[in-house]
Image 1 (tube, rainbow, N blue to C red):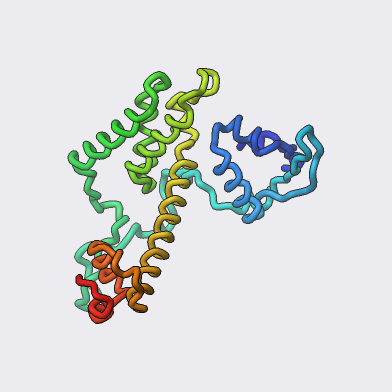
Image 2: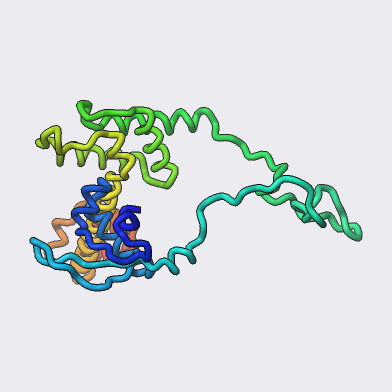
Length: 261
């Protein structure tokens, strides 16, 4: 929407730096760069040139209106009321049979299907997680508690782990500890603009790196065992159990290396 506000009626003439987009939308730098790359990949944005500025140059973009019009609409269609000609049946009836064969079961989205609401226990757990996440935000910047809790619960519904959100809040609190009041972000704006997303993505990247390092370390230990390397004497019982569980070594290799499971 910010890029559309900057564009001409035909979608052209967008020239604003990613830093400008970040300041006005209150999104993270990583989020802005990733979103622009995705728009370019999908063809929604098109690079049309460059414009000089005090820091060098700024890329000029154009919104491809045809691509935007081809996107699937997100608004719900209006439901018309009144009689219809040859109305279409809403779904298979219950208990109907054809030539003695029972009809198909009622589909899950049938109008008469009763979906069970979430239990009070689950709702209480979600609310408790949201409270813990918001409690990690710097208390002097809290604002609009109800709106914050709603945004947190919405993020968790999208599949974001509560612990990841809490760690994102803690990381932001640490990063902004020395900020003056004019530079900090109040909690309602922070959650509304999804500024936690950059921290969550960073956490995922760190976990991937840690997993890769762990796999490399296990492979090295497995090589020591298969080669009966003198360094085998430094392998701990816990590491032996981990190697066995990952099936990188066998009991026979462990015995040959003088190790016990």
